[in-house]
Amino acid sequence: MLTTRPRGTNDILPGQVEKWQYLEELARKISEQYGFKEIRTPIFEHTELFLRGVGEATDIVEKEMYSFFDRGERNITLRPEGTAPTVRAFLENKLYANPQPTKLFYIGPMFRYDRPQAGRYRQFNQFGIEVFGSHHPSVDAEVIALACDFFARLGLRDLEVHLNTVGCPDCRGKHKEELIAYFQKREHELCETCQKRLHKNPLRILDCKSPVCQEISKNAPTTKDSACPECQAHFADVKEYLDTIGIKYTEDPRLVRGLDYYTHTAFEILVKGIGAQSAICGGGRYNGLIEEVGGQPLPGIGFAIGMERILLILEQQKLFSLQESNPDIYIAPLGNKTQALAFELAIKLRKKGFKVEKDYLDRSLKAQLKSADRFQVKFVVIIGEEELSKGQVILRDMKTSAQTEISINNLEAYLEGRIEE
RNA sequence: GUGGGUGUGGCGAAGCUGGUUAACGCACCGGAUUGUGGCUCCGGCAUUCGUGGGUUCAAGUCCCAUCACUCACCCCA
Image 1 (cartoon, rainbow, N blue to C red):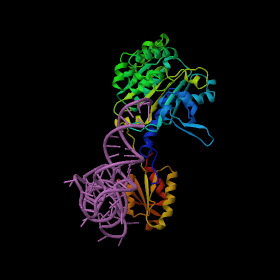
Image 2 (cartoon, rainbow, N blue to C red; image 1 turned 90 degrees about the vertical axis):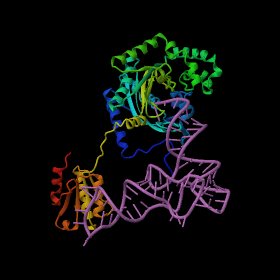
Image 3 (tube, chains in turn orange, brown; image 1 turned 30 degrees about the horizontal axis):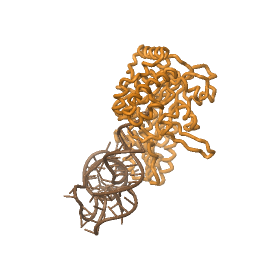
Image 4 (tube, chains in turn red, orange; image 1 turned 60 degrees about the vertical axis):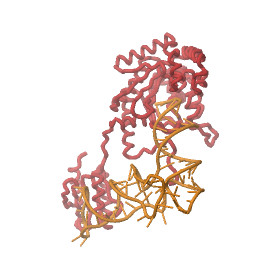
């Protein structure tokens, strides 16, 4: 073989494709029910969009982007996430001129240069939604509700919604200072990466997995403590809305999302059983992003769901009940003289709406029946030279093994009555 | 970027301390009186053990390198 697929990518083969279609169909259906419209943006963008939109200090930008110069010396990046492109498209196409808020969803591939592992790929697919133009806490709750609804309809169990507020730029700044002050006291004890994080992004120390850092950060001031009254109020409202519709959540003061643009509500939905990569949905509010990308200061909120991970859980929880689509009829020509009729008949019956397979390999009748059997067809039309000379074919019912000779002209009508659909 | 595991036919795999012809199962193809499936039986299907190099009289089995897959860390979906 000349080469293989690039690391971290997947071929989705027949048998698997149907599962994707099912997921995508459900995502579209539910989005529309919640009033979202689909948007499709390019899978590559100018690199600067992500530098600014996602944030220079994030892992995505620092080490995971697929960036290259195209032949026109443009700096291009394969999109690592869907929010920044959606915001860009919203501004570029002046969707803000429409009645607000704007509710959009997307389904498509994203690209990040990571080391692949269970549930993590270099090309992966996300179903995401975005709401631009409303501060209302019920929107936060509705976004979370949509994700939960999606999972519920798939039949997923044992999900955990983790919820936090990361505050507004004001209290976040204050919080940052408090954290720096707190951690500086024990700076030398922190792990290497966290020592680097201390001044750049102290929030991230909170969700460091190193036992030492966790121990130290145990008593660190939380986002919640330092949130300003407005942020507190917003967070309380969001929780209240969630309560009214019965969505259970865990408050997680150390939930800090890896992208810079988040403000206020941040959430993640986690599942057990698919390995270390247990986050199947992540999202939150990003009230500064639209302005950052060059628009008016408009609030926004959204989530992204990792489709591959959903597929892993569905498989693990055995939640697929897709049935194969088999052909109705198999056409078995015997000998050269019957080929033309077999060909014509196949096309004709397909035009009538039947699913038709035939032999393409000049195989023995025995071999043809064997493969018809594997296709699990209901009928085989055997075209023999003897019968052909009489204008007849043999119709074999594969279930009962009963065979009847039938005139070619009557075949269609006969099958019509016997194959429902 | 770091660490662990793995790499034998289309797939699942045996192959111990290196020693003539690389098991077995599934799948696939063909056959069992000439034009008939699903069961059974018989036969066929890897000059070759990810790749390259080395040690040796001799390597799938040892050593080195390299690539790939995989799991985990970092982080995320």
